[in-house]
Image (cartoon, rainbow, N blue to C red):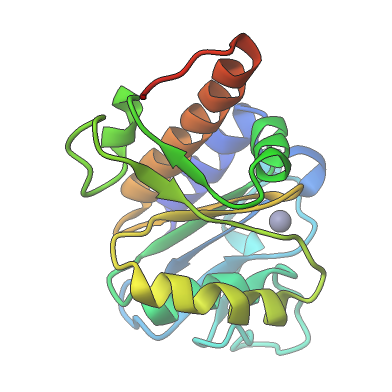
Amino acid sequence: MHTDLISAIQYLHSKGWAPATSSNYSMRDARSPGHLWISRSGVDKRHFREADLVCTDAQGVPLADPTIRTSAETALHTLIYAVYPQVQCVLHTHTVANTVAGLKYPGGISFQGLEMQKAIEGNSTHEEPLNLPVYANTQDIAALAREIKPYLEQNAGCYGFLIAGHGLYAWGDSVAQAARHIEAWEFLLETRLLLEIHGIRTHS
Ligand SMILES: [Zn+2]
């Protein structure tokens, strides 16, 4: 039923981007756009299957059994769907590169001069800056959602944000586009850290 999303989740795990049962994922219901399918908490993503997706309302409350625990970060998924009606899929990864990059650049990251920037929807050249906002980590996800909301509302073409010392969120208008975006951001973040180590500048 959600074979594209489940394939994407298993692929991201195979890349080593969802270690130790971390990371969470969601998509809109194809027939009822106000309903979401969100990954259950604490599942080893290597074995992720259809039964590990929980159908919720737009606030992330499970429809069948409100006592089921969806991801602790459900409020960040519901925020993205609420701000962007066209978004169909949200992916969240925990990698070494995105964990380090968020702490290294707490004020946000601007990429320029990298061909991979074009993999993010709406970007047709490496010559223009591409911004990825960074937020401080907290266990108060509701407060974090309130902090992120104004940026998303003011940036219609935004397709990701980073939580420092924690992980990356990316989304798209389809599962395929969301998967492309998360791979592109991860590539850009790893590249940025290597450029920093080697003292290489990509623009003046
Ligand atoms: Zn997380």
